[in-house]
Image (tube, rainbow over all chains, first blue to last red; front, side, top):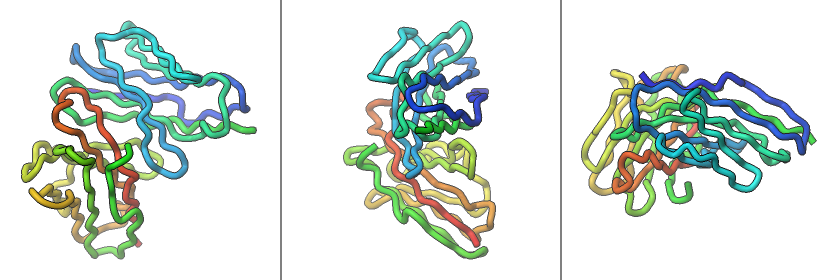
Length: 114
Length: 116
């Protein structure tokens, strides 16, 4: 069975600090996809990134970066120089090939304090 | 996620009433998914539909819940005889169907059901 674990329930940092959100996943599939979504206080889900299991290159998008390590089944997300607008709940998710349904982690509530 | 329209955004029902949640997928998308988010939890898959077909309803409670995606019109998630435990945010997501196996879903803003 597939499973996504986000061990950090809540994180609170001061603005401009770097923060890393952890995501560990379990799957028996050799082909799968990993995602991060942001859920701001307004409630909608904002897609951040999709990564397939064959691409272990780290990715950087502005202040966001992702570290995918198959050896540890982790797909961690780092925000550099955090801002108050980054405050949200962040979800990591997993889907296997041939199925579109996502398995979500419990989410990490990130609070950036001014 | 622009383009997936859900309504109502907020719905209040008393126990025993029916709730109907509607989802219009992005233009050109023929695959619709419904997810439920209980308070302080992650999203859980409920059902996957294509036009006029239920493909996977493994996450749907066996009783009181039903979903459809007719040839014309929005997808409907229907909850009969609601109970307090049905209070949650219900998210719809769509994909084109041509991006199969990628799981690139576009989510709506959710419908928040409160059962009194």
